[in-house]
Image 1 (cartoon, rainbow over the protein chains, first blue to last red):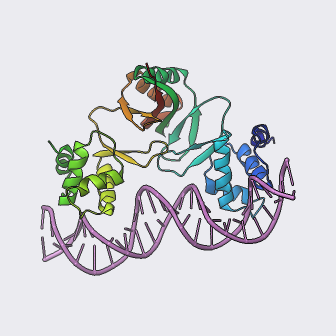
Image 2 (cartoon, chains in turn brown, red, purple, blue; image 1 turned 45 degrees about the vertical axis):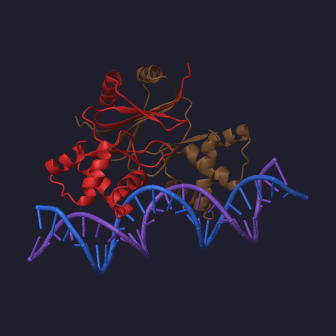
Length: 136
Length: 136
DNA sequence: ATAATTGCAAATGCTTTGCTTGTGA
DNA sequence: TCACAAGCAAAGCATTTGCAATTAT
């Protein structure tokens, strides 16, 4: 199991400590979008001594270094995810909290167009869909 | 100057107190998207005794009654706005904090389509564009 | 009359920070 | 070596809440 985040730290010159390596590993291996508490729990399974303050500091450092992104979905705590090679947006199941990633080039283009029409250069955006499963 | 929110309270059977009437009035007259602190300041110009707790409670009540909406734009406190007759999304100037409202039917349709393709009924969404002014 | 609302201050939940000790390059 | 990081507990910030007094219907 590769530790993509650790590699990115080396690339970006982020100093690696045992704690950071472990947090990086746990995040790299996460297929979901864990919050700080959940990350703390996961790293604590390996090293009980890592404090939640360190998790907060590390996650922030990774974010500022452009290695992970933070999501503030409605009604939930801040969640983190490794920055993906390809941009995507999220659909959140309002019943289960389940998150599905998606990409839609048409929407992306329209966003840029809308911003430009309003006299802005699009720098960032946030698109979240909230829905309920259609049973069939 | 009409107090649209007060009327909606009556419609929805929300009990009206002096504090709520004033908060309703201030929100109805706001053309921007004030946060709780700002609302508190504005109502305090008329009635010094209204506490911030009441503003918090009222704003939450209005939100739960479907009268106002809350926005959690990146990097800012919660902001409130009267629910508009026509839905719109927001473009936030990352330099000034200025907010521009916009509507784009094509994006709306695509969102619905994306959700359906993923097996979901679209219940809500959040679309925010963050940009910088193009000087020309 | 009486159930709901207010103001106040204390409590909360998430996140940050000061300080001392420990450690990676 | 020595600037930077970790752990701990205390502080911060936005928001919520318990309680006694007040008020709308």
